[in-house]
Image 1: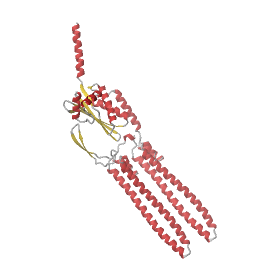
Image 2: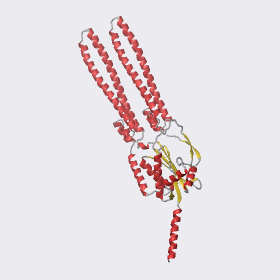
Image 3: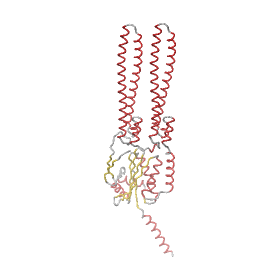
Length: 442
């Protein structure tokens, strides 16, 4: 009886050992970092490896043992992402299969590629890719999920529930509409942009609106003060009897009238500017879709809309900071020069009207000749100032036009100030083929 028991026990142990050895042996090489720190790639490889172990689908060699063997044989696994390299590493650690992978980061978007390589046959058995945009916790969950998808097994319920919770939270955060942004921007400039998560645009609109309102209020206060002074001097002019007093008050009234016209012109300019900023802010909130900032997909259309509103903003949006700041600087410079020339022209017109009043009140031929010469000189200066105003205005419009064309032609880039063609040529080390892609962005 004991003899049969021994045979049964032997068969049971043999089955256990055979079943255990029926699993393929496998090793996981460190993921190749592209655009991220090596430490992050190493940590993500660890999460991936631990999840592979949780599947119980392979006999996996520990990373510490792999590193020890590689160090003893002088093998450097950094940059090992080809089939040939994986095969060499597999023979070194004596496993049947190897997993290689790489992690790219472009802006806030992560792309992870993983491949199972047969060491014996030197070919790819299975490949998977995942693209993710979001926080680090979500990236770790995606790496864990990728381990199960690569093997072709159903992920555990704990992982599925965690991902579903994140997706639900994200849906709640993304419930922002154009209508909500438009309503807020109609109430207060910049509030629609704050609602949409576009803080730079929000501060820009809010600051510009506040600045123009303050300047308009200052001009309004100056206008009322000048009107009060005008009424006081007019009262003195009406009761004056001496010719000298009449001429003095007449000259003061003319001067005040010119200052009132200038203050009124500036008040109108600042009021129109404030109204324009408000209108642009409303259009901006309507044209640009409010979205969770981490999930903005950069397109030529969005870059064009931003550059239409404010020169340089389309370039900053696509990551071309040098071009963006250049357009902003040029536009501000030409606008400043235009305003300076315009204000200079107004000042010269005031001087012209003063001289003209003196010319009309002049009696002697010497005074008449002097004022006449001054009027001719001031008229030349006014024409020069007007010419400069026109030149700088045209230059500002030209910069705006070039900025719009640049934003439309140059596709949304990767943050480098290098113009790139929408053609990419790359060598795929897994398939050992060159690939050419033509991309069109809308």
